[in-house]
Image (cartoon, rainbow, N blue to C red; front, side, top):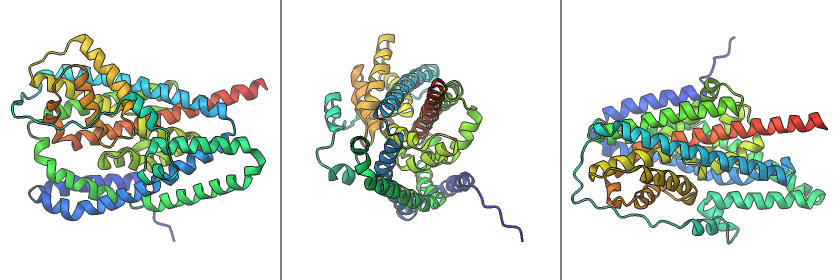
Length: 409
């Protein structure tokens, strides 16, 4: 008897995505029902993902560092990763500003009187630098502070390498725990289609009318820029430095892309992203180091959103941004992507910083705050695709370096 062919995870998530959009549009007049009775199941799924992310990041980074058994190699990978993230973020904000200027004439002119927005307190770069380093062992794990968890994993991983043979029982323990949590992650990921449906349906039910409403052109501009950045910048980078066909890359990334779009959570998408990049051939130790770092500091999609929104807000206030102001926006958004790492709602915090840097009224954030979730779905998708492209590229560069070393040996 022939065994039935199971639907791939990507296909299951796609079906859930389509069903969620249809159900969301049908429930347009009953958004409260969708929010009260469908959304909680999506939240349960996201909670399960967030629960598994901290142990996965902690043990997979430690396991990756131990398997590299060379501190200099970790430093080399870290440097390549941060440089790539900074460069693509600068490209992203530039694309956002160009797109914003091209479509500016079609943006709606919304009245800016009676606008109020309570800006979240921004943290200075030096404070962020201090906050990267944990002051106790439990708190980063408890508060799921990803940057601090990464620093902990790196420190402990380095210590295990330096101790050597005596640390063998610890190495066995770390690898076993990593395997156990990976299996746990596999179990949770099987619920992805249900999670996707329950997360996306209420958003569509609530925002369906707004999408076709006054901000449609601003949203469309942002999404055009998201697609241009992903298709042009990532395709060129993956082809030239990653040695991979862009079509193969995007096909392999489909489950993570669809999940990121519906959940709007980079950290929540991390387990699926790890699975996708490893299937694309990226080495496990590199993906377990580069992806958690990217989920925290790489914000290409968010940078595009800053560019488009800055142009839109300036237009509503009747302000014409000058070229030097746009250069300031590029620099501010690029540095702010690391400066706001790990901050909840980082997109809005970054937008506040960008507006302040060029003297635009912070109250302007209120113009786009209502549909921030719709912007967020696109920018999260771009963010996680950028993380994956970096993983594929760094993995390929390291393989080439290793091959050269073996050839010269």
